[in-house]
Amino acid sequence: VQWMPAASGGFARIRTADRRWRKKAPLVARLTPQQLGVKPEILSEAANADSSLFALPRGLLAVSETLMAPDAMLHCMCCAVDCMLLELRLRNGGKHIAVTADDLAPLLMCLMARSCMSQPHAALAFVGTYGLGGTAAQATGERGYMLISLQLALSAVLQHADGGGVRRP
Image (cartoon, rainbow, N blue to C red):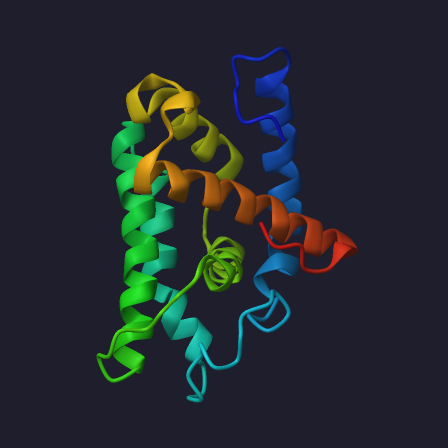
């Protein structure tokens, strides 16, 4: 997917990608964290652990899609990830839990798979184009890293739904 809508045909590609997302959403939502590569030691042993882990972040992602300011959308997306990581820490008795980039990628894939976003490609392209100072080239720092990570997680989830297996971002 082309993330810069201003590029030739970018809007059409994003619209097509979001149609594909909506078509695959029921299948994608049924993917388990284990299928997406989340390490068992990261998830709690409790029943419905993954649904409670992703409940609040899922709602935050849905809200982010309704916002009109790209920086507010990205802030909401980052808050969703922060909530998920805080929940992991709380499950660990409040102790710090080290989540490496290799651990974060499948967690973000789960988050995107469980999101209620109807147009995630459009939302991420909008943030990448008009947020972070106006250009994707300025996507640096923690917020830039999170934007790129969410874009890659979305692509990886769709590849998995197409039968490509887990391809970590």
